[in-house]
Image (cartoon, rainbow, N blue to C red):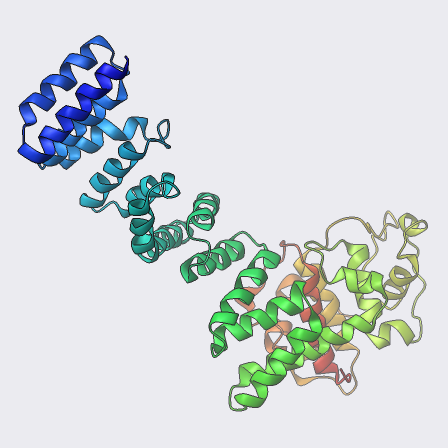
Amino acid sequence: MGPGEARLVDEAFENLMQEGDRDNAMAVSHQLLSRDPEFYPATLLAAQVAFVDGDVAHARELLAPRGDELSRYGPWQLLLGRSAEKEKDLVAAFGAYRNVAGESPLAESKIDRLRPRVAQILARRIEDKLSRGRSEDAARDLVRMEEWVPDETPTLESAAAVAQANSNPKAELKAVTQLFARHPDSRTLAARRGALELEVGDAGAGLRIFQDLAAEYPEDDRFQEQLARARFLWRLQLLPIEARDLASRAQLSRGDFAAMLYWLFPEVRYGEGGQVRIASDILDHPYRQEIVRVVNLGIMDVDERLHEFSPTRAITRSEAMASMVRLLSRRQPPLACMGGTRKNDSLPVETVCRVLSSCGLLESAADCLPAVGVSGSEAVELSRLTLNLLGVSQ
């Protein structure tokens, strides 16, 4: 097709707009498309007739299949955007207008007007997918949202929600920090930012946040408890780097957990050694000294038959909690919440769960999940609560 055919289309469109001559426009469109079905100006002319006739759905049906391919074709995208907007599909309309916004002041004004509503719609879609456990789909939607409406508050809220659902605390901290800058009076955002700073950011900043919250809201016990936790985590920064690194691990091994107990509990580090027990598989382990201490004190077990500690195996929640019970059982006088459990008693899972629930380390025995692994942050919190019960200054 050449300039003559393009001129035919322009004239037919002019007559359609000024005189309402739809029949001529359709005749021109059919004539040209019969000669070349890929002559897009003729398809656009047919879509314009449908739009003028009020058949918006048909106009969109003609345009949408080539929407991506013709993303830089201004008239095509503008009509596709107007058709989608008429059908209340604001996301599709925004996408079409955005394709040509740099070349069309009309498209630019359209996306400026639609941006807040599109951000809300996309945020609701992401929220719906997260509620149905479709976090990967939500993450893909977030990529588009951050490209289209990066500066909108719903985008930051969605980014925080997706990061939390996908266990990405660093990404969540970035989003929450930006949200908090916009809403500095939000207690919820402040507390979440503080918790994330303690977990993966600047522990000193996290401590300062909870100091401010506890001072401003002294009646809120949650902030007092979080302040105590923040102080504990901040003091962890004084430990050797290998000990600090353990707190950030997603999964602890038995050797890692033994090292954490060694560094966090003065009784383990400085207490008198107990019965000497041999574990042949720790001789070359980097935490050999720490493992020997917790094993000889009877805080962690060795397989007596194989004489192995299994330092590289992931520690289970039941093993970690049993160690906390053994540490608590060493306290004199005995804690009432121990229910008579002594340090040399065997510790079936049921006993461990009951004792820790009674002592306040678990909200209830139902929260005891014996086969689940333990992260560094979970082990630190269990240790903090146990040290509180032992009366150890933190």
